[in-house]
Image (cartoon, rainbow, N blue to C red; front, side, top):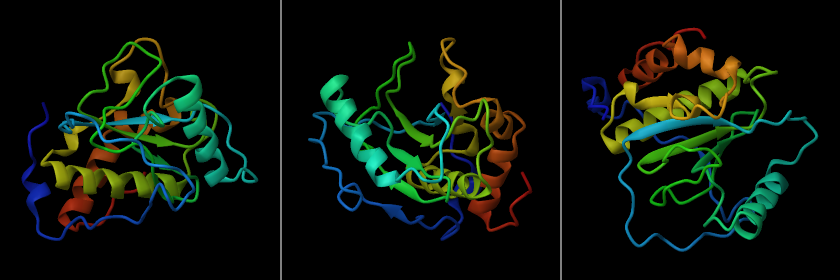
Length: 192
């Protein structure tokens, strides 16, 4: 388990990012879980599909929610947050409810963040990376974690390359953790 980092205790260092609520993007909230999960990890995912600028994010999220509930029979979208290429963060699944996965790892006690795009082929946008730093810092502060709590889907599953080599590189190099720590302490963010 990742232990709290002293940087995470800095007052007012990580203010909540702007997050579009489920009802605002046209989704519907799922019933709360009987026993809420305790967030101990932050796990990054990618959509795994090439994203085009003409795709409407809200329509995509509405279709994803419908597919997740009706086809997969999951409680909701498998991720708690979705980050669009423009850096906008969207709420998805209730954070108190564990996520879902098509792979063998157990996502209980993980806050799941999915970035739109396929990062085996493309690059996450600068706005997506910035939003990932802000959202991760906020989650770390809220849940009393340290930057070492951030990992990738592929760190827990041998069945996937998610979140793609081009996003994973920012995590594997330690840049993302350093940027989150800087956000928590108010220091300048390092360049990706």
